[in-house]
Length: 368
Image 1 (cartoon, rainbow, N blue to C red):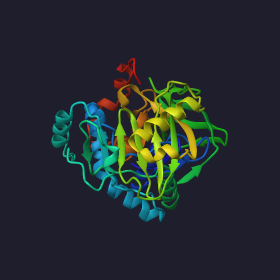
Image 2 (tube, rainbow, N blue to C red):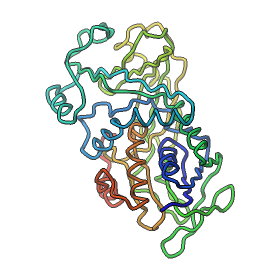
Image 3 (cartoon, rainbow, N blue to C red):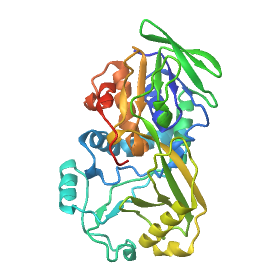
Image 4 (cartoon, helix red, strand yellow):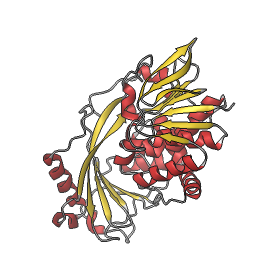
């Protein structure tokens, strides 16, 4: 089965689906209401693992571990086609103040994820002085989000895909449970299949297209510092705060979890708190002011579980949304799962936890 697919949403989730479809012989057009990858795909930090992976349920872990195992080859293929560097880097992650280290180590062993309580001497040991129970995860990788987006965009176009930016979808027309056209600001478009990958906006309904259940925007504020290269060469994490080094000396600090609707504003109080907490981990930041402070909107979903499924109202409309904090991490496995469903293949992962029906049963708790 092949044909023309319209993908609504030009972030990492939409572009990843486009890439798999093109690799399998489909025609693809991506529709993006703004600039490609301009929302949460650009705003995040690019850590290619759940922050404390042992804290998540089996549904998130299954997608994450499959993606993490494939990421190196996935990136190599994207870079080969696009001729662009994504800055993929296995820099490792040092998790501090882990409350149940033995349970965490057991989980990592069971899942084949390398973890140890022996911190390499090469790390900046002043950052862990006095810290209880650090765990070192040497194989955790990162990617530089804006560069991944650029490489995915280039790969999609070089493989024959079409991308329309500044193209807003208003709704769809359907007959007999089959979507026939999309109504957009660029006119009426037709396709054999449609994929919805609209991130934080997928919780909003469009004409004749119901909202995806329980997906809502969750704001995250981040800071960016510039130091000399090599001051920090691994990701640091403690109690919700992370520091992500780039090879050129930039360091990202994040992030907040705020239920603020579609408001992407920032505030001085949060800036000061993030700076203070980052300095506790990396004291050299005390005398450095951030060069940037921004916020992005995550596609929040209960329990961080995405919806990857056929839309219940249409035979030819599919969903790839709700990846919350880990859209970049989960991108390869999510795209593979969705395209397998689109083509009627038996997926490598059990699709049940990511079905629309399962999403209907989940509810938000008291914490984000």
